[in-house]
Length: 93
Image (tube, rainbow, N blue to C red; front, side, top):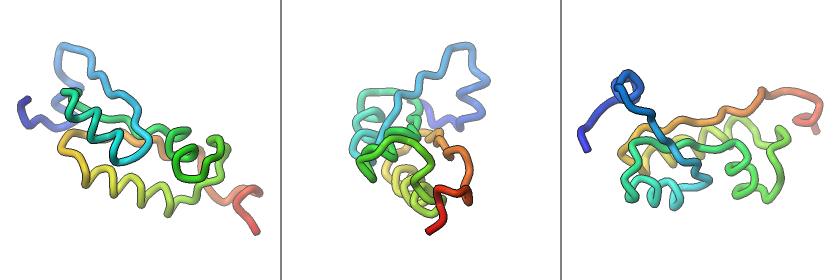
């Protein structure tokens, strides 16, 4: 697989298939299976990290840490679901 950037892959003639991962192990499996990109699912993050649905319960720092760890674990582009925003009523103690 050539070492192409996400922009170069998206500019190509074929569809870029990026299966959803929920942690670093699933991301590495997707990469080893030969896919050219990985999608970090918002629900997958929340379900695997908190055991709860994607209802805005994860903080920005928790999501950023998971994105950083996953990106460091694979050698293909990572597309990450950044959730729907932070600082709403649900995020206050």
